[in-house]
Image (tube, rainbow, N blue to C red; front, side, top):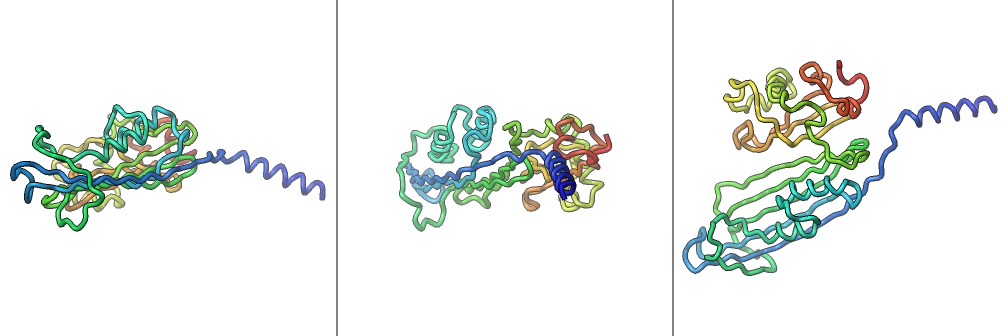
Length: 276
């Protein structure tokens, strides 16, 4: 009996050593809304002399200390587009107050705060939402942004991905995984050769087929279970607006045949996932 218990103890110890320690990961939720009525003295605005603007966000966000200060600043910059802010509250507040009007001379306009938009048929708005998912010691924040200018033919929609390494507390970039200078041609090959990318192949602009390469996007996410990197192309990047946002799959084993993987990339996906 003692021998059996000893063997079980040794086995459990060995199994525990085969797994990476799962880091604690906490998030916080932020919400904000700001409504404006923009007026001018002349018939200068679409549909009349006033235009309502609504900005709002509902964001799941990494808790304080999950990321390094540098990574937090990068997340703020890419989310709100303001390189001068140092805190979430400051960046979000400035973003909420934007009018989304592009005229140079804003002295023509008068801005009045509103409690809500009410039942106006046409108004300009910007919305941001995010969710965070977990894959081992990687966490991925998906940020969606939707904008609509009053009286425009259609709105615009974008998605951004932030892959966070909970061990290093840094944001993972594509060039941490592969040499992005070589990746433009490999992406075209993946679109042309892999059936999983068939939808993108059928929609892609011919100019990229002829050139044999595309500009490498900054947005991607990782599925370590299936050993795949997914590249994300926004509207108009490589396909017409009607085709929407495109996701191109790069299976790691296939990718390693066409471009060297970094040691960090091999560490994420584990032994046997690549040929090099």
